[in-house]
Length: 451
Image (cartoon, rainbow, N blue to C red; front, side, top):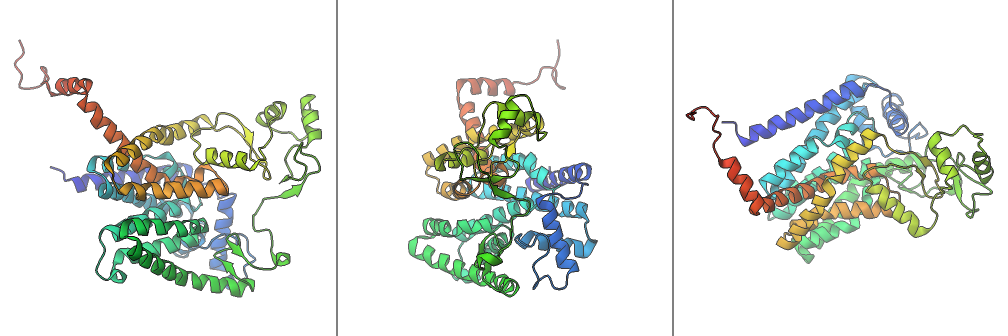
């Protein structure tokens, strides 16, 4: 009989093959947009001997973690070997699925762990990201890896915790995460809550301080590099903390062109992108003209007087809804001051969002409810990254793809809600009837005498 471990390994191999096949058939185009700047950074590392001290190459404003990941692959297999990158990202994402399974098994139960394994294995957003030159796959892995070892720190502490391998794996993983996506600095003050909840206030505070000190020390080498390159304090990259004089700062947001418009309705002081339709153009569009050759969706939005939101709380609500967006059936504009137009999603994109997240969210709430009812202390740990990630992107900038790194925790809670719901249904009269029907022998099965 096949062991449980062998079955899990078989599933993981299948998920890895699925990702490779997806990348093979859909991952041959050259990187564009953000991917182009990550790739240019990686090539600068390999080709420019002065890149450490002369950071004026394309993509230099990016955090170094993912470009270094690309450069390490290119150094072995050759420049611009995108499919090789996708192979490594397929492996990393399969490891992410494995860690989702392990956390589910440690914190909850075997049925939830298997459900989480299957759900994350077929999660289309995980699969989609492996065939892009973007940092999402690496970020997803580093986040779940760090939290897995953090949980082991909380549950399996050694007498001398500085000799605890899980503590150092957590620190290493989280530090690399900060060098890959500096937005996770936002997690640092909130992590004290987890240390205090699971280790007690004084012991937790002590270990948290050590964690901050060691992480800070690990950030020093790259900060020194930035000081030598920029002649000022720059933490990780120029988008994180840039203390150069304003006159020396260059526009580090590639392709983000912002300029003041003299008239954008009631908000005359706003800065918006140069492609935003002025009031004069809106009048022409309503007269049946299309002077800037805009698409049908944007023309329809202009005719319906759809404007970007501008109020503080309106923007926060917009980013919250964007972060948790399941589908997009209509077009609109980003809030001011960006005011970019975004169209509706394709049928396939909407279907993927509904199946991967829309179906899961109600069960996530069910899972949270049952964990509260059971007083399961693991709830704080699982909800923590969901809450902090949401708060971060509501305060700053919310997009559904920024939610993907925490999808693993959503999947765990959602699958727990599914298994709990299934167990409750089995205990009802309807469930008992179904169980009896399933228990009855098949009268047409071999060994049954037929009359």
